[in-house]
Amino acid sequence: MKPTCRLAAVALLALLALGSAWAGQGKLLLTGGVSSIDGAAGGGLTPWAVTGSHASAGEIGGTAFATRVRTQDYALSTQGVALAWDDRVELSFARQRFDAADNLAPLGLRGLRLQQDIAGLKLRLAGDAVLDSDSWMPQLALGLLHKRSDAGALAATLHGPLGARAADTELYLAATKLFLAPRVLASLTLRATRANQGGLLGHGGARSNERRLLPEASLAWLASRRLVVGIEARAKPDHLADSVLGPGALKEDDWFDAFVAFAPSKQLSFTAAWVDLGRIAPAVQPRRQTGAYLSAQVAF
Image 1 (tube, one colour):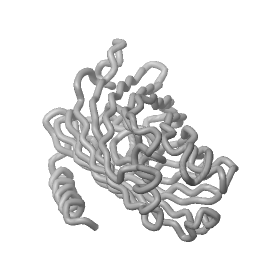
Image 2 (cartoon, helix red, strand yellow; image 1 turned 90 degrees about the vertical axis):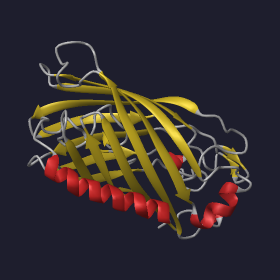
Image 3 (spheres, helix red, strand yellow; image 1 turned 90 degrees about the horizontal axis):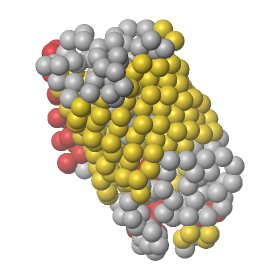
């Protein structure tokens, strides 16, 4: 682990411990979302405008989470922590590990493993997803995610002929609204990104390097105060579709999921989902990668 990442993780863990002593019980269960795979509070695939934990105005809170995604051919593990202050600012840090096993051996990438560190900052701009439930005004938040990947055995090709950079910063604007009467939460996020497979394959490419403004959406129903069911969709750029590895070798598809989140207590929540990550390296594995998503979060 690089020194800067180690210091960031230690600092966030220390603040998380401090926040656990300061946070109150201001939020309703699950209205702070869960931890996304990027580390920010929201759904499993996309950040929402909410800040994580149970901290409300004038309070400090924190979360820690672990997530595992398993499809037919690949696996992704993510762990992270986040700190929220005054229901307005959120800091987060997550580490992703992707295991391709021997599925990309035809590309000369037997046993490929990728890693990515993600540092996030989110600022609530206006509105309150819960308290403004009697109006059409959503909660709005502006966020950034700084990503740095380690492509392992693929690094020389990825950052050389493919032209992808190892680090980049994404910006997003999220709008989240809770309708209390029908118990429905809706969230729309616009993300300016050039990340390949979420950043695990770097950012941009030799033939296409511009950022693209892409939508992400969540729709959830609060079945009870402890149970939420919903769906998500996340559009993705496609900078490496045509590369030196061959036409369509690293083409990307959009992501989808259907999830269930359950909170047995204020401090603990679990999320299970069916995910569709589309085709990953379709020249080698043409079938869509579908499978299970499991996540556990501790919040204070």
